[in-house]
Image (cartoon, rainbow, N blue to C red; front, side, top):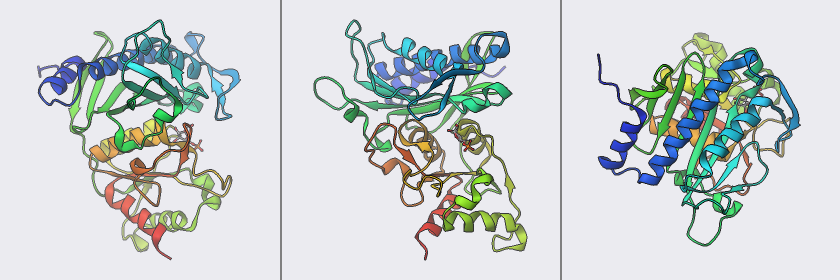
Amino acid sequence: MPKRIFLTRYLVEQQRLEGHIPPELRLLLEVVARACKRISQAVNKGALGDVMGSAESENVQGEMQKKLDIIANEVLIEANEWGGHLAAMASEEMEGIYVVPNRYPQGEYLLMFDPLDGSSNIDVNVSIGTIFSVLVKPEGAGVSEQDFLQPGTKQVAAGYCVYGPQTTLVLTVGDGVAVFTLDREQGSFILTEEDLRVPEDTKEFAINMSNERHWATPVTRYIDECLQGKDGVRGKDFNMRWVGSMVADVHRILTRGGVFLYPWDKREPDKAGKLRLMYEANPMSWLIEQAGGMATNGKQRIMEITPTKLHERVSVFMGSKNEVERVTRYHSEP
Ligand code: P6P
């Protein structure tokens, strides 16, 4: 029976042996993991719990909220606000930042999350997940939205929990990518993969093909070449996957390779893209890069973008290095 390494032991060793994480960050990550277990329980209830369907409300993005969006957001807020490790939180489901109430001690970390990514899949029993990113609050009294506006290179931890056939927590603190699978009997996350690597090449792309007529030329060129397969310039056939949950698509890419594209398109030309920089693209980009992949917005490394607003959107190309390099190169060619 192989030795079972629990999340706590992994984090203690990252703290003690690797010197990667201070005790407060270890506490933060354990609290987030516990919140993800609670969300997993709610998700798994499905129609047996009062968690399905619309909440009859809109979020700051103007998107209809599902009941589970709100439940997941509340679970993360309640789990993290009292521990003394955080100064504030930001969420896809909240317009402004959530400053830790004065009745609790304030910490030095800033936590951002998409509490339930892919929630359009909830009612049809397709994988969804929680994405999170951790920054250090800049020196100075108090905390404001401005403190969150740091590039992705400043992250000190990032990860997601995918609620699928397994509940799987994928995490980086800058020392590679570790995967933990939830053992429901014990209620513990067990280390099942250490140092995940994304293959540099792939034959699988992930994009919502229904938007094809709205794409910019470099994207149309890249996808057309994939579709031409071995009869075209790529000389090999490609497969396509699109779950409609970034967490599920990125988890597949981290596990077996692939390239994920959610590009800018002409439908809303003033928007850089659909996905959010702070709590979707940045944490996923760090995980992909830590696993040897690449993540750009077509022009530059996503993690080098300096945000101008909390819910900033971005064009996303991430996954197998050689494919992301190619589609990014197409953006700079005439
Ligand atoms: P579309 C989910 O709403 C999400 O933000 C990502 O998780 C997912 O990759 C994307 O949107 C799906 O978008 O336009 O295909 O429904």
